[in-house]
Image (cartoon, rainbow, N blue to C red; front, side):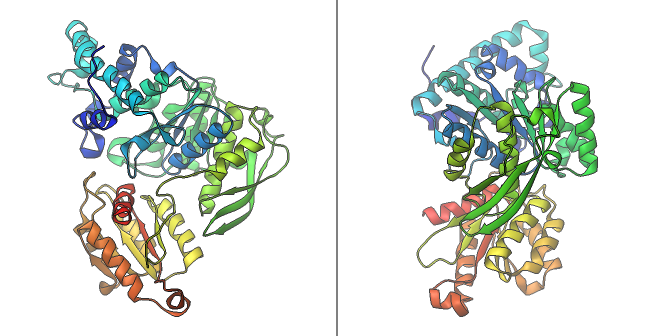
Amino acid sequence: MEKYFKLSEDVFNWLSGFINLERGQKPKSFRIERMEVLAELADHPERCAPSIHIAGSKGKGSVTSMLSAMLTAAGFRVARYMSPHVTDIRERICLGDLYFNDDIYCSAGDELKNITEERLPALVKTQSKAASLFSPTSDDGCEPTFWELLTLLFFLCARKTKCDVMVVETGMGGRLDSTNVLDPLVSVITLIELEHTNFLGSTIEAVATEKAGIIKKGKPLVLAKQCDEALNVFKEKSREKNSPLIYFPQIAELSGVNITTQGTDFTLSFNTDKNTTTNSFFHTPLSLSIPIPGKVQAENTSLAIAALKIAFPQIGEDAIRGGLKKLKIPARFEKMTGADTPPFIIDGAHTPESLALCIETFCLLYGEGGVLLFGCAADKNTAAMAKIACPRFAKIFITTPGTFKASDPAKVYETFAEIAEQEKATLVEDTQEAVRQAILFAKDSRKGAEARRGEGVPVLGTGSFYLAAEIRKYFCN
């Protein structure tokens, strides 16, 4: 096979030229049959190892990272797929929490380029089905998309590195997501909210139906707590697929949750007598610690442990504790550090529910009256998030959440200014300048104990993972 790429950077630069949802992909390209054709052309790398598949509106990235960390601590070679990235696109395709060797990305990229430029065009010429799916001249077809090819690149990397298990997060939805060619050991669905309504539907039931598409025949589903509308959808789909439903509120409970700036301690207890599928779970309470603050992260951890024990019942407490101790998840209540910088937290919360939980944790640890640096994509429920955020902060800077996704910071500012006092909100469209102004305002607002420590009032940067990435750039520079 011809060698096309010398560096992983070259592979991802090539991929960036394809149609991308984050940059305006059209709905007609969302057909799982397209990914099935690509997987077949690659000789089905998605079957190279057993897998765990995760979907949901919030927390799925954390659950994916936690599963990967615990499996790695148990001695497995784990191929991990998640999105979005914060600093480096390779964060999406990893071996555990490390990047693959560059030659793995390049070799997989060579195979992927061969598929798209040689095998697929040859198939399109001879097969009407392929032509209707991939020919740009077809009413329902288009060239392979960034997401399809990125997912296939992940599967190829996993196969080339001979991984033991794959932990795979959906990109959007589930039913039509490019990752849904998997037949996993267990599926996991986190909390459902209204999101991507132009693609997934405008009701909770519609969004849940799309997420439920990852449920596979006869394979268990571990389900986070849901509202009644979503829960009914998952119950019906599980019955249809003869899939054992492990509903977390019925089989486990959290207690003794203690949140500090260093992380979260809690106790997890399983009700193992209520479901035969949970017989392999721990029969005595687990006292656990994670290095991320927030009750929601304790809930995510517990969900991940339940899925882990179903997929790999032999894994014990030592691997769970060891994996969680080393857990690192960028932009999940992550504290930035810099010379003479006030406490500065970044978080990728981008829905009303996740923003509320993030702010609750922030105010619990740092108090109210701090500084909020906020930026979100154009398709978000800005009014709902403004109502949550405005009462809790003394000053709010609205900015652009990077340039990767479409946004309208001026419109976001208008919404926040209407809900907050006029002087409380300020629009600074240049992201790096907004970070600088937020820090300066926080430092100038020093008072009491903070002044004696040389700190300022705390700052929270949130609303988008892409904003978190821009804030990280500021601190790296």
